[in-house]
Length: 576
Image (cartoon, rainbow, N blue to C red; front, top):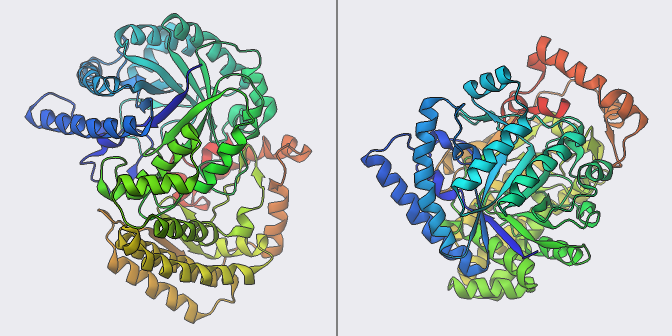
């Protein structure tokens, strides 16, 4: 199979989407013009101009394919509401012009697709007709491929659906619950893709819901879905680790469990590490994965997420905005690593030369310090190195920072005190990292990179260093005062939105209600340190706990933090 080097191209569609927290999970369709008028024509012209710049850069760097959202908003069907069909007709016209920009530059177009997306009318009609989801999707794709010969394939997502931040008549839901259902979906859709000579890129990413929720890491589930499939249309797409795009994760061993063509998903706009507001360099991390992947069969390329992911106030547009230098650097180095096998330092030098920056050696030194600061201050290294599972998900190695939020509270303090046995080392590490940030700021002018980005990083990470002092030393009123004053100073320096938006600093110093001893018992009961399920997981954690959670959500909803309920799909999805 030919090499496939995909990059997501959704950035241009977020122009003018001026909200405090942006949902970067897919194109904000409710923000797009719904009718044809002069203002809409101007908007679409800007999108095409941005896409042209993006496509020129992606093709020049060596990508040969792009991903865009999505089949649902471009596939017409008689069961959809009349006003939606009129809007789809507009989208089809405009996206056809966008597709031409990509294909004329040698970039194959792939469209994302959730299983399954409904509108109220579509749900009603499918229920009345007792239509199976697979049959509907096969019919939909058959017509869609006939209408869009320039689309090279689809990217299928079954393990995550639209989050609570999606405001659209179309809403996707999780309908695939078992491995057998996922396999049957492939058996029903692959013949359609083969008929039209299109790819079906199947993502193993899941958020832990239902029995299919461990597909990305569980060898048994993976085997039950893919064993024996030999379709030339099928490509399996896997994130590099057993969780989301975090550090401290080993390479996903499922890359070595099938001969089916595979691509590795890599994120260069790191959604949990600042989204390109400051350097969060991935070069050495991805170089290790690239070396290991050489031993896996039939890995044909990568899918690089340079824009997609996260609910954050940050808004730099990759490959277009000059301010997106850190995303662009990660993206350039990633494609050089995966496609050409170029050493990291050589790739950084090539990027510095192309962008006419400054001293490339100073930039490499700055990036080494940045890598150290991210690994040791954004993450708490001793916690991050631990392998922990809850139900069907691997616990993220990043505890106190989530998207655009920094949590400084007593519950995080108790958890870290339980898991971290060497708090003194964590404190020393934080102090050393603050020195590294000062060194990075001194290197920035020589490297020819924005000093303001490094100052923003230092100011943000100073809060993390103070938080670490709070976590690992005895609490005093003076410590609370210092944290509150630092938070006020940070808020006074940086705006809620704009070019350099601030993190939300969520503080709560009230004592956590659960005694440390009982917290330890709960952790040992609920979490495990190996992938395989324990007997207690099969008897209690996977089933009974789901019922307990539903009772709590119904009768004691205030027990569940608002952030956990409102972000993404909501924490309840983990208990399905």
